[in-house]
Length: 221
Image (cartoon, rainbow, N blue to C red; front, side, top):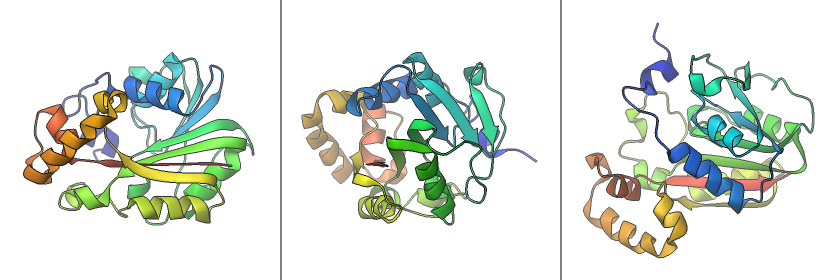
């Protein structure tokens, strides 16, 4: 039976790009990460972001429930668990950062995932969660039949607070590196969203990622 990662994230459908490395670099700088910090990516898939973190000098580890073969994962320690139900295979207070992108929307109940992320973080360690924004993506959210739980900005912040993360925050996040550098361009993206429906799935990156938005949530143990 075909696997999710090898099917939905096949190199043919979703070629490797420089975006994962760009995002890792942005998060590294924004949240004050340091070379040598231990980072765990939960739901690491084919390793795009793990590779990016490793290139920045972080001690990167990956956790997923599905095995996949990817050269990007070479030299990175991987473990496999059902993160919705099973305990993570790491001791208490192991990591400086836990990162997860496009995972929690696949979980019926995020409780175990959140508890385990909190447990394996060091005191003062940071969780970074990214998930599709329901407000902008509701018309295409269930195009991925494995999506189970949509989130809003408010819901992500509440989730962090409920599971005892401090200094929590959540925000709309644009997957456009040029906007990270020039935030004023968000105005252009808002105008595009007014005229371009999310179902368009434009091949022009600035248009597509102005319409398809993410939520970034973060908190500290």
